[in-house]
Amino acid sequence: MPKFAANLSMMFTELPFLDRFEAAAKAGFKYVEYLFPYDYPKEQLKVKLQQNGLQQVLFNTAPGNVQAGEWGVSAIPGREADSQRDIDLALEYALALNCPNVHIMSGVVPPGENYAKYKQTFIDNVRYAADKFKPHGIKILLEALSPQVKPNYLTASQFQTLELVDLIDRDNVFVQLDYFHAQNVDGNLSRLTDALKGKFAHVQIASVPDRHEPDEGEINYQHIFAKLDEIGYDGWVGCEYNPRGNTEDGLKWFEQYK
Ligand SMILES: O=C(O)C(=O)[C@@H](O)CO
Ligand SMILES: [Mg+2]
Image 1 (cartoon, rainbow, N blue to C red):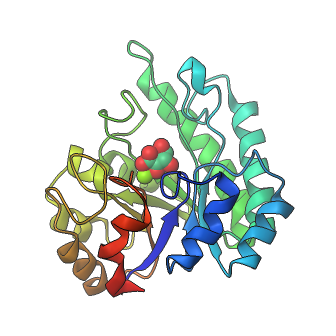
Image 2: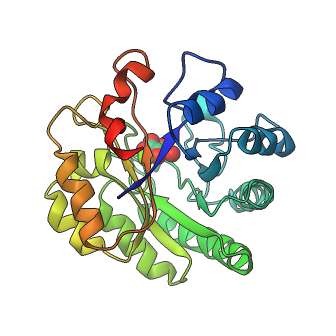
């Protein structure tokens, strides 16, 4: 049975961020993920996790200057020092929060820029991270984002991310398989899951096309969850969706998995 993690950046947004931990625990979650921890001291987040009996399973490196259109800097040529600073900070948080996975955000490649140069920059920066995280047993995750959500992100297809994982060639670097993006770009989700078997170490879910609860839309998540069990996937499944309304009212799908 999948181990579900509440995504506190998207769920329970009726509440201030620090109150979402308790809400997730009360709703029956044992695991949480969220985009960025950096607005809060790590000690404060650690207490929130402990108080609510939760394990943090994922967060991301810092996004850079979001107002200026950045969504990660690790692929941007000339920003290596910023990337390494973000990776070092992520490691500090991961150690303090005992978090087993960190998603390294690549960034956007503006049209007309040299794609190969961005790709190589990302490979180099992820290798830097992989070697720093390895002694601590922390996995690095790389994600493809569909153009509907983030146009011109370094990778849109799961297969582009898989190619990067192979080129980076470190045994603690994996694909973060977000089925919402995968359906938008690649489709054929059962075969895709087989093709990525052993190469992904975290999953995220949401309905397509509306990115809501996994009980509507064009993906049959009952089938996907069975498929993940069938291939022996033992990582977490992050609920990275925008609730249709009140978060708790939308959690009927989760009843059978508590
Ligand atoms: O948008 C997603 O999907 C994510 O998983 C974020 O962490 C990065 O955009
Ligand atoms: Mg995702």
